Image 1 (cartoon, one colour):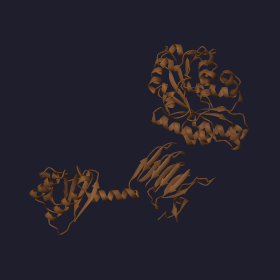
Image 2 (cartoon, one colour; image 1 turned 90 degrees about the vertical axis):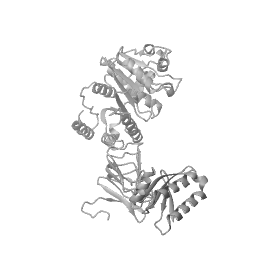
Image 3 (cartoon, rainbow over the protein chains, first blue to last red; image 1 turned 120 degrees about the horizontal axis):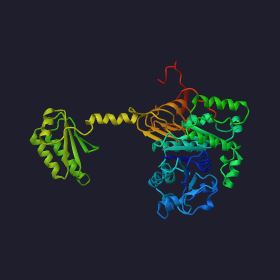
Image 4 (cartoon, rainbow over the protein chains, first blue to last red; image 1 turned 30 degrees about the horizontal axis):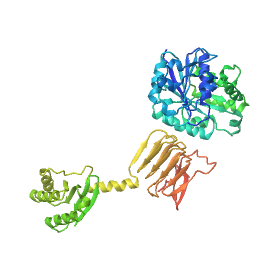
Length: 267
Length: 227
């Protein structure tokens, strides 16, 4: 096995990087792949909570880097999916505890044993982002359909290009079809026109995400959930399947617009 | 009788074409150097003698007198072949690194007006900043949060949505044009404008200064253009 390293980033905070990482990790693992999720947000760790694994942490990524434990010991196996692992961030340190070359070294060590390595990047464009991006083979940029998020994503995409990690792919998270239809939310077409990168998924706003996040139970594990289905589709697209973009259930106009938008581009 | 100018490699001294003798010119130069010797100590001098033909002995003696003052004469520029040969014999340069003084003067002027240009063939994203004394030509978009500062004109073959400043050194004749002109902020010389709300920029536009106001007009292929 040679793992693909995917960094999930956004620039702006609070758009759903950690939720996306947890759900993509769980979706890939439930498709039978071996997955490890790394929380690169040193000092503000969250991924453990979203995966419901916070009470199992003994060692973290900084312990592994500084040699207090072996990397294996810092890996926590998920309680539901035996092929899903988490390497948690340290909560009592800051971003300078890790360097970009540490991240590259850790990923190289893990590559042989996994299919996917997902890195949850911190918000911002400083050291934490540099760490998260250093080992990446692919980068997913998560945005919300709002102006500030798109602006920050544009900056991040520029940085990704200058690090030669591009082209990045885009996840539009928390889209509200009703609002878009009324013209009160940024349109997917406008976003893609500005950012000019490939779209890999559209995730609808869904209150189940909040509930499941609080419970530490990724929403992809619920078969009937809309947001969960959107994340499962992204996981399938990452694995090279051609999955059409979900038709979000709103009156005609929007669906027509969506399908018109995405068919010609294809993937 | 003589002009002194700072150049990249030190000082350039130009002997005017007048009726003064070589000796008088040299004396004037040495006097000038002595007057501010503390300030000039260690400086490298280049000498432009115009069309004067100078003998090796004269030039050598001038060089020695300059060295005695702790300065060095490293180049002699002349359009007299005799002088050039003399300078070369004495081991001095006969060209300044860039160009002859006249030409370097012209270059400086033209870059102020933005006669040279840079060409960028990519999209400028948020956080990118492009600053250039001359014109700027972009094939691609300029996204919100990107900045262009140009001494001359700015041409964007794409959507201009960031901040743009043309004629940044005060050139009021500078223009900005784009296929879609909807910048966050547009400046020409010292005038500032923003895109009006609800502005639909589906046609190429040109912005320039008219009576001290920034004015954007839809490009008219049939029209005669600006001038």
